[in-house]
Image (cartoon, rainbow, N blue to C red; front, side, top):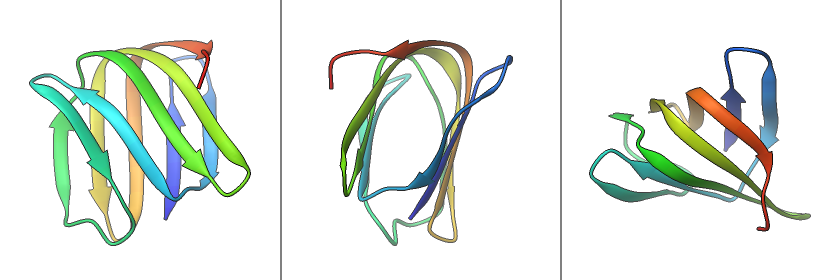
Length: 85
């Protein structure tokens, strides 16, 4: 599935992924390929993206996560660079 992570300043991640784990406003949510359409508000926590070559992790605060047509878009209000995946 295609994953795009965007902060107010720049695109942080854009690529293929096997899984996404994010902190929604009411708890963690996991996204795998072919997930049903979804829109949720993000809380504060770690965003983990699993790719074929490893994992990426970011500290996210606020924003939105959308899943449509095997594509995940994350628009974060604040995002801090890679943390330990």
